[in-house]
Image (spheres, rainbow, N blue to C red):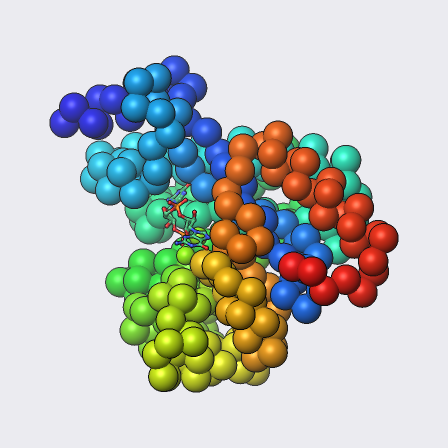
Amino acid sequence: LGLEADLRRALERDEFRVYYQPIVALRDGRAMGFEALLRWQHPERGLVPPDRIIPVAEESGLILAIDYWVMSEACRQLSAWHRQFPVEPPLTLNVNLSGKHFTRPDLADRIDAILQTSGVPPRSLRLEITESVIMENVNLAIVTLKQLHALGLQIAIDDFGIGYSSLGYLVQLPVDTLKIDRSFVSRMAQESGKAEIVQTIVTLARNLGMTAIAEGIETAEQRDRLAALGCDHGQGYLIATPMDREAATAWLARRLAEAERAPQGTDV
Ligand code: C2E
Ligand code: MG
Ligand code: MG
């Protein structure tokens, strides 16, 4: 109860922050965009991670306001990056969406309003929804995701591979991207079977016309194996940790300058 009141106050006092973690093309290290990740800049406790926030926010319904705040803030930032760094293809922004939105009739309208206000083209925004949320109520997910997709947004399934996806449903969902869960990436080298699962997800994505993004890349070995398996994109501490907007902007400027100097660069 205390935390719920704290979160409400944090929203009013503007204590939430968006951190940005880069997503790159694994083939050449090119910056593709960022995932927006919630943080709470607590006056005494410092930076609070989302695991401490999201469960209470979901239970209290505050997650709706928090997610829209993250989306607005991150879209405003993306629009600034589009002006500052007009690369082709345009930089994309991934935003996490709680399953609590799925029963709300105004979801598509509210996202549309955020796009209009920020001037971000719908194609540049990718909503991440976890596999478990989709599978909890697959029929509702199909209807909701179709509405969102009709706006022109991209849709990614987050933490893919751990939520018992029914593959039959996958073709009915308007999904553009599969995000390979960190647990497969981190144990790819040690545990037999993990690399095969990654390979299978990459192949599945390709055959369904989707892209694959690997999460949680921490070593050069993991990056190289993923690239060899044909995984399109990746993110992880090896490439960059989530950063505030100044640090993310500096990272982006550096990475794009490097790409210009070495167009075939391999240094992810
Ligand atoms: P996620 O969407 O799967 O985000 C990836 C998480 O992995 C992030 O944790 C990120 O910091 C972390 N990560 C990235 N690279 C590495 C790596 O190389 N190694 C390791 N060990 N971890 C890595 P974070 O920021 O703590 O977020 C945790 C989860 O909270 C997210 O998982 C997402 O489900 C949720 N979340 C974050 N922001 C939001 C938000 O604005 N709205 C909603 N509804 N959920 C959010
Ligand atoms: Mg995510
Ligand atoms: Mg994930």
